Image (cartoon, rainbow, N blue to C red; front, side, top):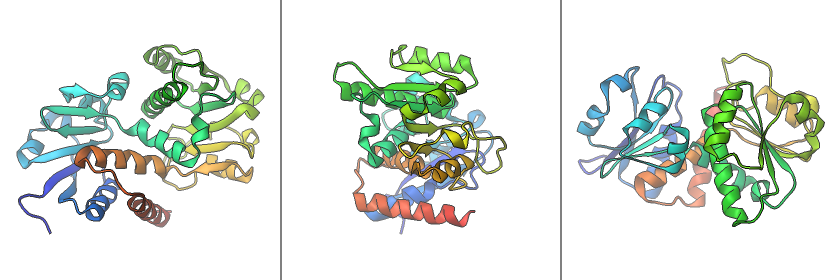
Length: 296
């Protein structure tokens, strides 16, 4: 039941026919008994129309997806550190101005920490391999850097983070934005294969493997080891070719939709000020998995 007091939130982007964000937020509103509703605002020209129609409707906050994240960043009267670093925001909160936030990287890092917090320990000599250098990679690498620095508490970071990507200009931009840390390196595929046993965590951030996106996986089946963990952020299909490669070698898998789940949970926290209970998170996770399984 909705009333004049019901708080309105939603998502803007184009296209939005398959968005799962309403499932995340409306489920959490119901479980928390928060008087809110999350709607889909789909149109191909938001950057031309502007956000006035949303403000007139009384919208309190929005999720922002492609192709509007860079535009959303420019609207912020204040911006979080992640947004400032990436020059892109996936969340706008309309309260005392416009607060532009990026929760993409937080979603990925929370997924990893929930699976195995040791994978982001700065005190071990293993390595993390990040595949890709686009917007998702930037957000994830920013949060990895924040996590390693926080955990290190001023001590030397022993873990290395390697980037395997074709766009070296984008890689260099990432280096500069993160302050050229000594623990960050750009690598090629030969180097990756030569040192594959050092990688404890692999994070794939490109669209390769997504339904409708053609192209071979960035790593061959022979790369994977039982000792590794793969996090492919592509979640449609549930299992990409890269995930199938890894599974055949008994590599541990973090489901791709966990990033969607946890970035959405962080948005819910920002929208409502409520920290979700673990049982709520498990409920939303179950719903997302069920929906994605049916989309095969």
